[in-house]
Amino acid sequence: MPKRSFAPPDSGTARPETTPPSPPVPEPPPPAEVPVEAPVEEVASSAPEEPEPEAPWAPRRKTQPPERPAVDPRAHTASELTEYTIVRRRSDKPGSGWRRAVHVASAGLVNPGVGPAEQRRQELALRIRCPLPGPRQIAVASMKGGVGKTTVTAMLGLMLSEHRGDRIVALDANPDAGTLAERLTGRTDSTVRDLLDSLGNVGSLSDIARFTSLSGRLQVLASEQDPARGEAFDRAEYERVCAVLSRFYNVVVTDSGTGMVHSSMDGTLALANSLVIVGSHTVDGASRASRTLDWLVAHGHDELVERAVVVLSQDRTSPEIDGERLVAHFEARSRAVVLVPHDPHLATGSRIELDKLRPATSDAFLELAALVADDFGNPPPVRRG
Image (cartoon, rainbow, N blue to C red):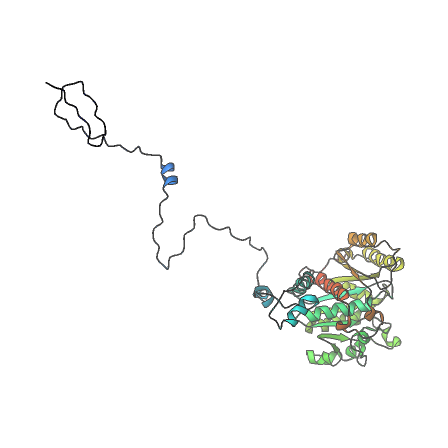
């Protein structure tokens, strides 16, 4: 019998068979693959489980809880919620320089924002507006006259009153016909002596306003211009005046006399919460400021000195002065040092007008006010003896 060949339908060539033909036997299907159960970790990593649909009102679930912000240990009060702390501003309008010129020229369409210097001023202003727990007494002192103590008192009072919303008064406690009121308001018709004579009739803020003059938002109480009557302004009378002022004013800035052993100076230091020491960028002015600190330490005012701010006026200086060594000396003895540059407007000794100051001068006194305000939350300093 001839041999037969068998080829699959899709094959193009026939393969000869050596065995006799037999009916084709259907092959059994291959065994189904049994999936090997993978570990739980691998299943989770290869096929993440889809989250269940959530209701629209349900809070969104997060895989990891967000880190909670650090809690401020200080007690929170309503005074922290002001427009300066919680209101977002898209871009403040520039107040000076080329940024302001661009903003004005474009009729407000182009606002480059404030520059670094102006941003620094805003930060200092926020520090000045810090909460005030109670009445504060700030003493401005110096053992040497002619270093700008009255100017520093006037500028400190103006900066505090311009950037704070509470009542601030500048008191001229100089027994030798001080010039604080002349530098600020030009009026000396009512003095601290007139207030002392009428203390029994003072029962409201309007009663005290009869004896003060106004410079911007700063109230000014002039010293007695008659030296014969001014000498009678002793510690007891100073304390009586401050007791009345503290009832109606939040901050009292005192321009003290140059005599450290004077009775009124004794009362000024006894009531002061903060101290500003004034010197100059010269050998005699700096050495007298340092001697003032020595005297204060020797008379039990160590903590008051440690918390003091030293102001060095550069109205009269020389390139031969080692300014860095001078600043380092006072930084080691006090809390901070502020350098006030020469300003032609202040050098005239006439009435002070803030809009006539150079920007660097205004910034220096703004920093001084911020440094003084940084100490507002601290308790009164402890005196020895």
